[in-house]
Amino acid sequence: MAVGFVVAITLLSPAADAAGEGTSPPAGSATELPPAATGATAAIRELRERRLRDQQRAVEGRIQSLDRQLVPWERQQRDARPVQPNGLPRPLQNPTAERLDLERRGLRDRDRLLQQQLRNQQADRERIERIRKW
Image (cartoon, rainbow, N blue to C red):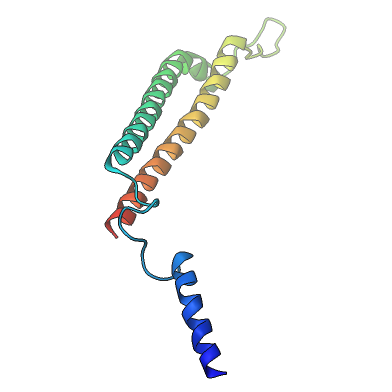
């Protein structure tokens, strides 16, 4: 009975190691990437981050240009509304400015999304570096 128990433990031990519950995998195994693959993934990651930074710069530039265009309209919105000859205040409708304001709000949302993606990329890169050093 005791011999069967020892045999069972002995047989289960290699299975546990093969499943990744024991020691680390041997050098040169499938989980370890060759240096060329590591370089390629790093290049792809750099390209992706550069593309996100370029998109973010473009969005920020467009937001700044919209801000410059909308300053007079926003100033008009803050000022007292002029009165028409019949005594009613003139409506403050400027479809172009309203469209640009809507576009600006959408671009601000896009900018926040790009910043979040850049932070995620940075966190992923740092996590991968920590894992490799570990």
